[in-house]
Image (tube, rainbow, N blue to C red):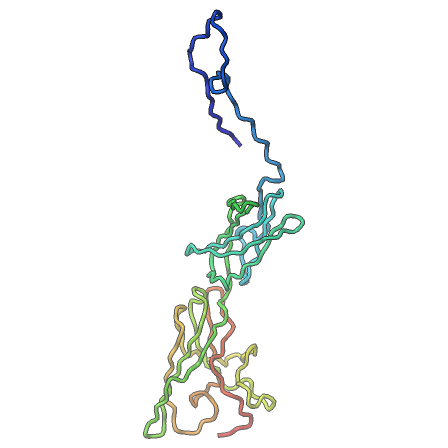
Length: 284
């Protein structure tokens, strides 16, 4: 560290006192001797801040909602490491590591989905704090990663808005599906009808035709409607005849509806807004 030192000198060019002149005591403020402050002690190597990345690797691809971050520091000056994640909107999120391992590794895990970090290119960096709470940035260059994940499953709600009966015994039913989904994850939502009742068996009588985690048969899905990624609801209108038609939805071919979220990296697990119940052995 360079220390700027101001030099105070006696009047330049002043004549030296005559040898015949009596000597005169000169106080400190009148001395022509230059006063130089003592050099501060050099910082101990253990107090110097230096830090290096451990993970993620630069230009790596992240395929999960949770991101592990880790760095190592040299010396004993660090008391905390704050990791930051930045995306295109300029927003920041992150996590803090307050306790290192014995080899001076600081790590924490950030939930990108919970923070609302959208898929795409991200920049990660960290600051190192010392005992005074002063944060030092840029000890290691920021790293770029690509967050490559499909959207999470939508959380759905199915509501029958209205039913109007006609004189011929038929009725017009209006239904609404609403859902929640993190912003900027989905570019499209698709609603499918599930043909038939895949879960039908004697053992499952009275249970839903479609349940979570079941594999849907190939060819059992029929696209009903698709909307863009900013949409969070659909309205469906159906005219239902007066004929007895069993437990299927709208007296049609569908035993259930499923909704999926999509982006360029893939599709979510299907949500099940509504399902008919198994009526094993029923005939109409």
